[in-house]
Length: 258
Image 1 (cartoon, rainbow, N blue to C red):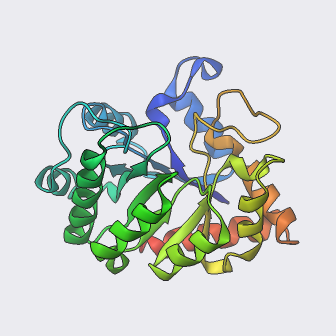
Image 2 (cartoon, rainbow, N blue to C red):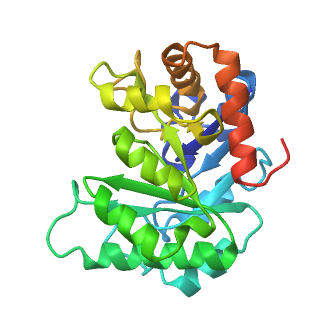
């Protein structure tokens, strides 16, 4: 059984599933995917996201504001704590820093990031961290805010082994997306070979970043198997072993019964 540790279910194109979320979920069940973590991007769309998945016990959610979202409701510590207290919420984020898509004075990104860390610590729930072209500031803020107390996930990992080691030292898991299947992703593939067996996860980040052979098309949680297959190849093991280990890691991180 597989787990997709990071997907945006409220943003999927459901046309292949008769525009019916329940039809899509039947396909998920038929694909031996036993759990999904649906990730929030902003506070405005969060209530509808929560309503969409409310009746599915195999779907958990996060609450947070993506680092590129600079409009809408401010993710204050108090607001994040209030929303994050819901039992269906198992993580805070995605949060972090992104210097690729945002530019100029990014002090607001730093403020939002720190707010998320403080809320996660108050709730004792792990963080979902997005970082792009901001690795040193990401690590610095995680250290300054004591994020190692609750740990979390460096999602959609796109950095090198040096960064991975520092993230692991801060009590974070490394999650690999479809990018690990790209021929150009040599640094990421090297990390996938080296990361400790009890510290990696797999994800789709769907509907974005579809793995080979679907690259450039809409992504779906059903494609998480292709990520598992690539990591199995890189680690010279079986898909079944990668599925079992990544699933066990997910339940360990979130203190959930498998």
